[in-house]
Every structure is written in C-alpha cells, then in structure tokens.
Length: 543
Image 1 (cartoon, helix red, strand yellow):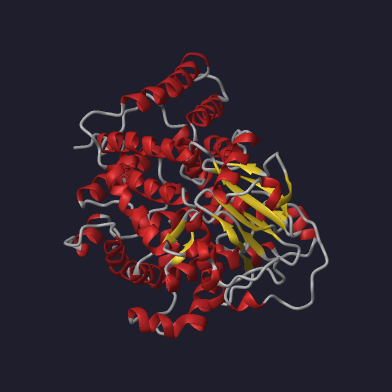
Image 2 (spheres, rainbow, N blue to C red; image 1 turned 90 degrees about the vertical axis):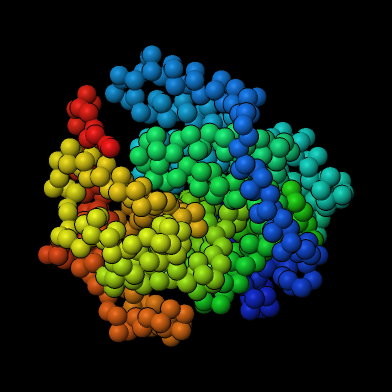
C-alpha cells in the first residue's frame, strides 16, 4: 500500500487513545478496545484458526491432482520456454524471473504470497528474482469493482452509498489476499478499505493441501531447502496465510502492535486506527495516513529526515516487540511502510504478525543477548529452545563439529570450490543434528533482511559495528533490569564482545569498522567467485 504526502489542518488536542497505542496524534475516531464489538470472541477464533492448520497440512495418500495439474500447466511452459530459448542469453536470470513472476500471478493468491516471501530474500536469492517478485507486493491484477462492491456490501450489510460518500473504483494497491481502496465515509472521514478477494479462501486451502503433499518429498533433495525444512516452511506459510483470511484478527494485531509501541515508548512508529464498527472477516476499514514512500530518500532528506535514525528506530522497535512482549510486525517491506514529514514511520498490513509464547520469547531474548556477548553455547541453547535443534542435542559437540571454537574463516579469502565444500560440509553436519529453521524465528529474520537491504538506500555508509554497539548500550540502559529479571543475565556486566560480532560477519579481529557499502562489496566478491566457478565441475560428494 503506497500513500503520498498530503498535509491537512489538525486539531490542537491530541487524541485520548494515545495512552493506549502509538496512533496518529489526531485521529478521525477514538479507539476504545472494550467497546469494539468486532473483538468479541477473537481469542477463540484465533485458536480455532490455528487448530485448522494441522488438518490442512495432513498430506493425503493421493496428491490433489486438480490443483497440481493447474500448477504444472503454469510453471512447465514458463521454465520450458526459458530453457529452450533464453537460458544462454546474458539476461537469462532476468528472463526466467519474469516468467516465474507471471506464472505465479496466473496461479493466484497463494503463489503470489509465496512470491512476496521470496521478494524479501535479498542476499539469499538472485537479485533479478527478488526485483521481479517485488512486483507481487502491490502490482497484482485487481479484482473487478463489481466483485469488490459485492464483498463490501455483503459483509457490512448495507449498500455502498449508505456508508461511503465516495469509494475509488481503482485500488491503491492489489496484493495476494486483498486489495485496498481509498474512500470517504458519509460522516466525512478519509479512510482506506481493505477488501478480501472473493475466492481466495478456498484457493488458499486447496494450495496448502498441494504444498503439504509435496513438501516432505523435498526433504534432503536440495541442501538449502533441506536445511530450511520444507514441511516447516509450509507450516509457517499455512499459519500466516490462514490467519490473514480473517481481517478481524488483523485489526486486533494492529491494536496489539500499537499497544507494544506505546508501552516501549516508541513514538517514532505509527499504526492506523481500525474503524470502531466497520471491521469484518473480509473487510477492514481504517484511518488513512499519508507520507513518503520508504525508498524516497530524496524527499525525506529534503524534509530534514535523518534516514539513519529512521532505520535505527525501526530495528529497536522490532527488537523490543519480540524480546520484551513477544509481538512484532511480521512482514516488513517497502510496500508496508511509509514515512510522515515529521519523520515517523507508518506501519501497514498487519495480516502477518509474529507472536512468541513466553518460553519462546525468553529463548529469543537469550539468543540476542548471548549473540552479543560471545557465548556460543548460550546461543545454541537458545536456538535449541526455539526449536532449531532437538532437546537432547549435545551442544558442546555441535560447537566442536562446526568449528565454532576455532579461528574465523573469511569467506572473501576462500576459493569457489572451498566455499562450496564449506557450505556442503556445514549443511551435512547440521542436518545430521536434526537442525531446522525455527518457524517462530523466520519472520523476524526476514524483517532483519529487509532492514539490512534498506540500509543500502537509506544509510549505505553507516558503521554496522558501531550501530550494534549503540543497540547494546540502548538495551542495557533502557531494559537492563528487565533482562536480568527475565533470563538472569546482567548486560551491564556481560560486556559487548565485538570480536564475536566480527566473527559473525566473517571478519578478522583487526577490522575496525564495517559500513553497509563494504558489506555489500564483500558479498559481491563471494557472488562473483561462485558465479565464475566452472558449471561442469561436480560438487563435493555427500555421504
């Protein structure tokens, strides 16, 4: 969802609901959680929705032939034509990325959502694929206005004209599950209306069944996908997208994120207010806010906005939400953020929201604290408690087998064959321990990847090591007592271990600083080395 700058006079008295959440200073209405009828029974509804996921993930003996056939009809021609006509061209990767994006669009909402997830994989996936799949964030073909009107009128129970003085037929954005339209209520407030695609619920459930049948067959087939654990990926995908199908849960997520931001004092972030009555399973009306697109650096700098501080506050907010409250926005990307002229960041699209239960939150907190103090065994123990390793894993053996107690290996100083051998060996050992990527951690990591990529635009010369030191100091000063209480580690006594942080980046101890620009240069060296590796050379044998 993109919005543009538009300043209107605002009343002088701040809204009273600012004590409850990080909302705009002067809202079109006041949020009173106890008086919102659409919140009734949402705890039970969230539990029911989550309980539905295991049933959807239970693979049948026979594959869902109908949906699989449609998927193959879309993907096989796309890949086949590229292979026959374009694979030897200089722009080969751009061509296949474009063909895959178009195939995902034809396959509909579930695959569009999958493409959106891939678009957040800067550094993991080819840049051509990431760039192309970014178009799936808000450039998906829209539903007809007749279908939009039908959904709105059926869910709200009234004719469109009786609720809205105006309702733009062209959407502001169209994504996988829904599209959003600008409108004005008959009472005069400017709003955004999020409307679910009319056939998306049935399609999503059918696609999840197909993915659940296929995922176990991919385990161990491809090293990277095996490490990521395809069934766990499908499980995470199912949990997030199934919850996205109920906009009442999203509206509740908005209130929870706003509350967490207010409790941690993060007033640099703003959440739109959901409407007190116009929220249903398929329709969500919220206040309309405006600002600069998140990548519009020129306009932000012209307005005097410190883009480095913008990134820092976003990272702090994400960390505080996860570490202290177990709740955080789970789908940060450029289409879900914009920046107001006063420098505050507006968060949008709360369909995917990370929620850690208390044991998971404590494990996550331990992971981050031990990660900055050089406690390798502590990090592995926290990952184990998050589900990355079986509970009976010998962590000391993992440290020794992975060479975590040895000297740092700088990947930029390794040959292509050495890099491949190192990755193959690491993957084989991790799989031998039953390692998997914890689904509760994946959303947060994806957010970090986005903020990391955004640094290239907003603050390419910021010193990453200096920023990590600043974050450590911030959390020590603001939340030191809470950290001691929760996990028994005093960050004021367990000093930041910059040598361990450098080791995490593959840097030697004599490196004094690392800007994002330098980090990108290191990545490019590794990518070029891998790309220049002769294609006919076989990978190291895996036993």
